[in-house]
Image (cartoon, rainbow, N blue to C red):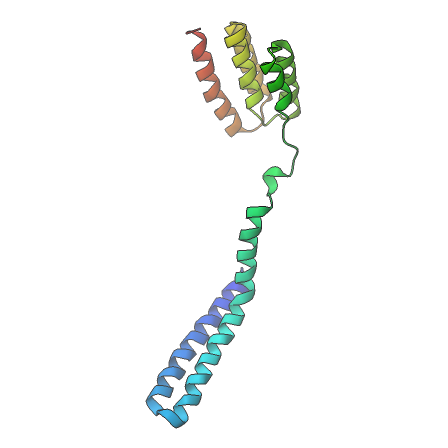
Length: 164
């Protein structure tokens, strides 16, 4: 960043000199003033060269982030296909087991806990088991924001228990 600030300062100096040389060249007329105008435009080229490297790096990083994932994908992502497949096959006990394994392997994920609560409420019609999962999940989920998000979503699911 300090390098970029120095380059921007150099750009401002070059722009001021360009303006001064161009104005001076126009007042002097064709024979002598033409060299001043050409020199002024040469300063613009120097300014562009000074800014090229940091701007190219900045635009390159910006474009690279479009095609290459960042830190959020540096760790393995949870495998939701196993419990979802068991859920689709109506193997609810197997789905609960797979979601429990997912929750243990990925403590920052809130979805496995929510899905287990949904199964207990919608399939088994057991809100007490869902409340137990809610209490256990609040102890095992990492991150304050994750806990808040989980608690808000879990309250919606637990609110559904009264209507089932």
